[in-house]
Length: 290
Image (tube, rainbow, N blue to C red):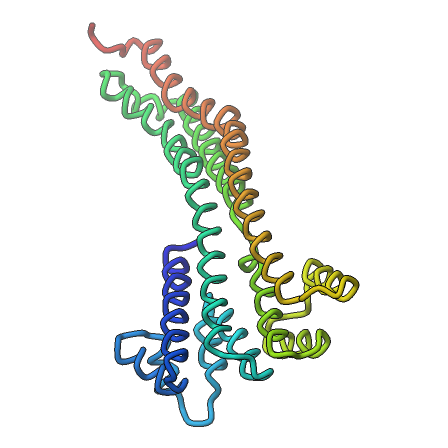
């Protein structure tokens, strides 16, 4: 996740939390947005200056990222008549929890990813080391054998970088933050709407059709006669906890998998670009004086 995306998610959670507090204090939604805009909140400013007749959810959705999730929750709460302040407060907590999950995964992946980037430069460091030791490394690259070492080493370096990059990309979390759909359905159900009505409202607000886990929780609620809202929120929390654990496991596996491009590409490139030219320099009689 980019630094900008992380900041957007953190700002969205903080803004929604402040908005919920203002609404609980009896401030009307338009006035609450205006107060946030006066404090320098960019999203609130966009809502406040939007043309008359435009829905708040539409303006928030245009900002994308985490604000798109907030837009869905806002539309659902307005449509079903759910208590806006407590709904937003709970959704802000869910959004913050989801972001913390993604942050934990990003931190776990940072070390192996940085190691891969650092190791990828070792072949070029080998060339500099040969020059520093006094070997005529650069002139060997004008000879057929040196040219072959140079081409093969560069190809292996590029292959190692591409391979490592794909491994790191696959280890990154994919898709939207887990559990937010269940939290949004819970907002719809908290107004007393039926399950069918809640699912239809969430889909119409841009939250998509119910995923397999949400559908399973709702079916369990109907069979057991248990409160669906509590089950959904518990399921969302568990989904984020699993995502955090899975992310750490992916980071641990990534550290081992990065040994493959290192051993098969980076180390041979190190030999071809560093050791090979030094040997050729010695064979050509251009060894540095001792």
